[in-house]
Length: 100
Image 1 (cartoon, rainbow, N blue to C red):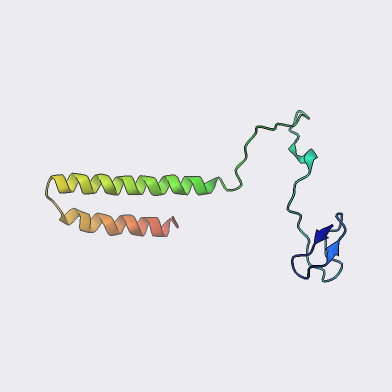
Image 2: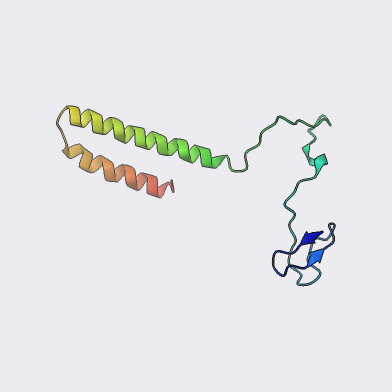
């Protein structure tokens, strides 16, 4: 039985819409036959990511952070502090516009 998220009414497993309110029903489980690959055999060790783009955003954020850390170390070693006043907001704005 599938329970409607909107009204809480129990519906048949084959139902696509709630018989009480008409809300579209969504099942949270996957069928066993969905795991079979193109060869017909199930690949139990295949890992698929639901949101692979989130990992690329984390990598991009690490690149910005490491670049900023390198700039801080470099300019502090050479006792030049004024470039950091320009680089830090530029990196922050770039990360903000890229929605990181």
